[in-house]
Amino acid sequence: MTNEQSKIVNCISICIHKKMKYLICLTLITMSLSAIAQKGFKQQQLKFERVRDAYASKWTSLNKELKDAGFGNGYELYIAAYKAEGKVEIWLKTAKQTKFTFFKSYNFCEHSGTLGPKVIEGDLQTPEGFYKINVFNPMSNFYLSLGVDYPNAVDKTRTGKNRRTGGDIYIHGNCVTVGCIPLTDDKIKEVYVLGVEARNYGQTNIPVNIFPFRMTKANLENHGKKYPQHVEFWKTLQPGYLYFEQHKALPKVSQAGGKYSLK
Image (cartoon, rainbow, N blue to C red):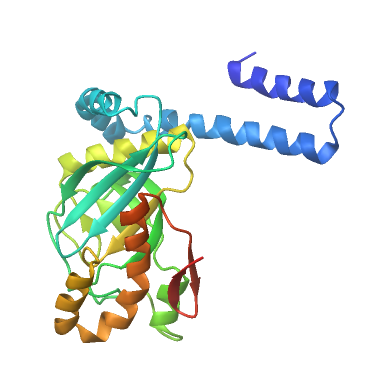
């Protein structure tokens, strides 16, 4: 019997011994299966040559950095991207921590479009908003890539009916883009490995917040002069940015009426 099978048997035994109700027992077993599945994510990813190469070239140094920063036993990951600065920031926290800590940053290696949200397919814009990673692609046309779940409800409302929102937005390798966030192949290796480790640790929802710039009052006023058509939308992004800056914790963001708001 494998270790994973033993965990499930133990869970069932506890249910029987404590005479738990069927639904409670089923919930415990489901949670156990889910945890086991997450722990196998890294193993599945390592079946791909590019992922193995990423771990071979990056994991020794990354693991040391993680341990030195206090994240050697697992972590949750938050990714923040700033279009004007061309920066992708990595923030981490342990399960026992309430606040994220800055870990490191990476530069965009190319830009597409201008400041302002993506509106329609083919506009070359990089989205702006609150998203999460929905794809780990170890066989990407751009080496390795992490999919962003654009379009969300706010994006769809902005695009409107009978128009195409576009899609396939990724943080990826190579150095070309028509709306994605490109890093070099070398940098995406690190970001991808960090994502795999977080997912394998059990984090199914890895947030990716894409901002036009660091959304201070001064920056909003400055960029708003050049892009007045985006100011109203940017003001719906700003509270989420400011909440994180103050608390180093992610706010609960709702989407309604084509706008973001804090719950």
